[in-house]
Length: 365
Ligand code: KG4
Ligand code: ZN
Image (cartoon, helix red, strand yellow):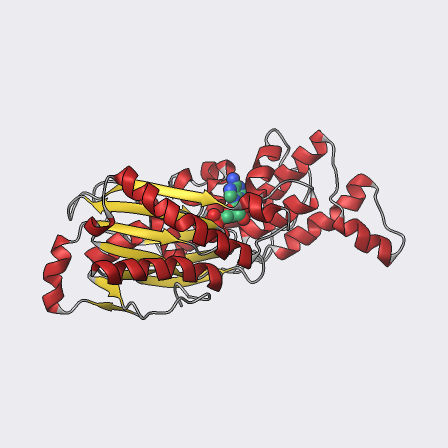
């Protein structure tokens, strides 16, 4: 899939300085340009543009792949122009083009990958296919300055809308899976519970906002699979669903009524809503923090990194006083893809332009 440069190509690598990346794995269109400073002092972000499609999908209650890919087609060329003028760099001056090649929605991935391949072929520059999860996993190192290109051994927690996984990182391209969710991802649980409560999408920031001032111990919610290195959040979501009729007294007499009512969000009053959001948030964070610390102890590493959309959560960041990605880097963006691509270039990797996107691309075994 990704291979190392032949010896002769290494001369080209020494000149490589600026990377442009596209991120179109789901409903966010991102374009970013990163420039390596030199081999020892990190990278500069010259531009990072993200066009959100939340409004286009909100009314359907989830992402519609066809709408997402059509919007990527509209936004990507605009963001390319915008990023290149912000960075004050013509596309012909870019030294390598990268795109997320998976995991994600096939019809969305195809847009970014096709554009990056076209640019790489057109300008005769290398192309890099980047794993979206590697983008998240490396993002805490971006902007950390000195030795940012030396990824030291760490235990990495990736918590997003589609993934929850713990990975042992030995260095660039050297990842071992510790555990992952067996059902819902942590972000997905936030989104689903927010939907049941009639809060907006994405649910994570909504629940965090309503949890402020709430009592995290008011409702006793389950922590699943405490002894395992894997995660499970589906039971927690179901526990919230079963708790709601007890809190509101809204019980159903018939299966039909039940079906109708489960489509209708529960409206809780301010205090109860705050307590429930805080208790739910705490149940998710408690499991994430406990398992991550247990893994760091087991594998004897003193560095833990946390990335992905859920790591924007302030309570999670407070409980993890480790290396977090900057909040703006946590949710989907192309800067993390450009950064991963830049590290890979420095490490002597590039991809074949014939490389296909892979909606199920794995990060580690
Ligand atoms: O990494 P991301 O932008 O996209 C994926 O790769 O999935 O993550 C999006 C997820 C959503 O499920 C969203 O609800 C969650 O991250 N999220 C949060 C917060 N901000 C975003 N979850 C909890 N608290 C937040 N503040
Ligand atoms: Zn993501």
